[in-house]
Length: 70
Image (cartoon, rainbow, N blue to C red; front, side, top):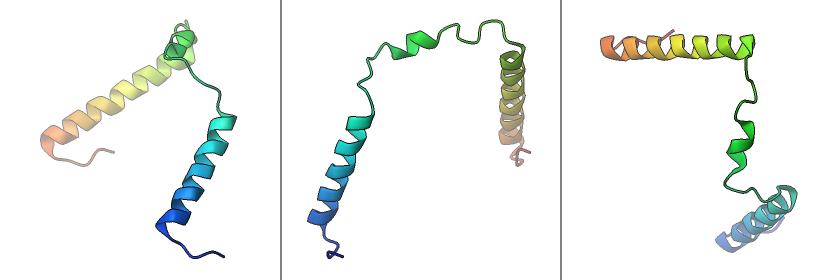
């Protein structure tokens, strides 16, 4: 194994970045628009939203009272 130096780390990071860039297609800044309405009228997503809202409210109450949220 080669000694670990800043130069060798920089080369390894560059190789990883190049490998990752080759695997991930270029994304346009408008990609997020493709998911609008994706879940439409979904009971499951409604339940997820309600649960997330409950969790947030519990965290807010805990922060106000300096309690640990459940």
